[in-house]
Length: 274
Image (cartoon, rainbow, N blue to C red):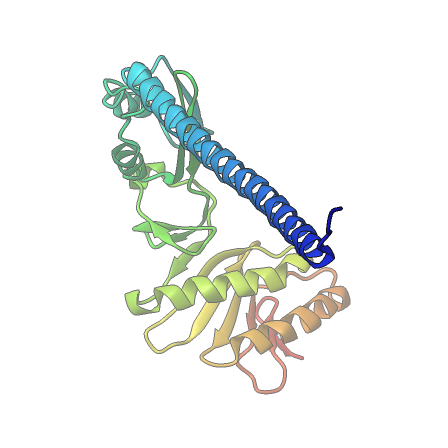
């Protein structure tokens, strides 16, 4: 006859279940730890690989530059209009820099020497692999002459080429040295106003008293006075063509715009006020 202790059996069963549950949790946590560990290792390997690739690329670039550092310049392409620049002069300046290699070309010095030429306005230099240097030269574009000393370019800036190279047919601007900027500014504004009438200024000047005067093509003298010269030119643009239409057989010799209301036109010996 055997006696079964039900309480003890139940306790053992519960303990067994607790143990199994804890063992299962341990296994699960251990697996998670392993997965987390492998994830960190994988990310670390990726970072190391990326660093190695970057180092390799940098090293390859350094090696390439070192191998080609002495690459000679074999071709020079010059783009210019040669209106006022002699090819021989350019060749002499550029040749002095061709002893440098492709990468070590002193572009700053070359640009500075080319800009020293009086008819050069802008310089653009670039390299074209593997052995070509391209030089683009923009020449000065003169629009007027300042006395017999210098020329104005399209930007209203003075430049001083040799007098023998001055183009013919440029309008002559005159005035005190301190008024040079006012002269070119007023000339450009007034010429723009006159363009619709196809009038061209051949001379534009201001005297020491500040009185302005211009000569248009066909030797028409126009006296502007010392104030409100732009409104006076506007009045001239409105009234003078009408006066020409009313006097088809006459040719204007001078126009005086210094009147407060109107202007005077000299056709010959007589003057007519409008």
